[in-house]
Length: 298
Image (cartoon, rainbow, N blue to C red; front, side, top):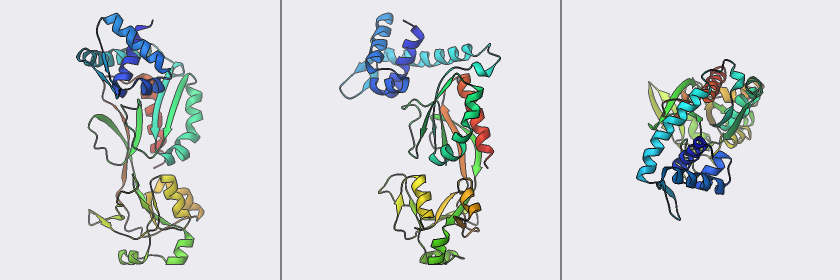
């Protein structure tokens, strides 16, 4: 049995604390994952994982092996690509997570060009507004918009997305065009929250270099960017979103810009990846391509 594959399986189980989740991320049945771990334990003559009814935890020996294995597997990925002159020969699977709108409008339309250059690669693409757990869910890289408080991952800065306040023409016809902040008392906001039940920040703007928040009324609260956009198009209220995502609606007249002098702070776009000595060449190549695609939209 391939010893490197046994180590890859063990590392993924250790990171996800689950045979089932590890199997899903590796594309293997749970039974095969269990066989790999048992074979590795038999090979090394020690118990690597402590199994309970609720979770799987690494033993002391397992923790030592986990740290050594991460470096070894990173080195092997590096060696595999060391003498390849043609990037078209890159092989393997890349698991990524992208925000919905960026995936739909920016990345997916251009992805065929990338795959034509690297036909042997396999991509697993998650597209969600939920903040995924990079390590626990086995992602190679994650495209994240906004501040990055997590110090356990590396954040590669890509660009800044400027913001715009938008409303539909039908909304403006009904409620009027706000000209001053005081006018917002008579207007409605589509509220966006990460988790339903959480409190909305309200209307966010920068005044004299300080970020301010103004509570506003609103009958619709959403927790996805697609619904946020659709609610604005439907005339339910104002929204604040990256200009990049709203550009086509502003150009077509489906949305109009309001209060351009009071926009929210720009949002940072970053690529996140796990702290480790080396990234596989296939992941580095994809991240470089993705960075160029995102920056071209700013």
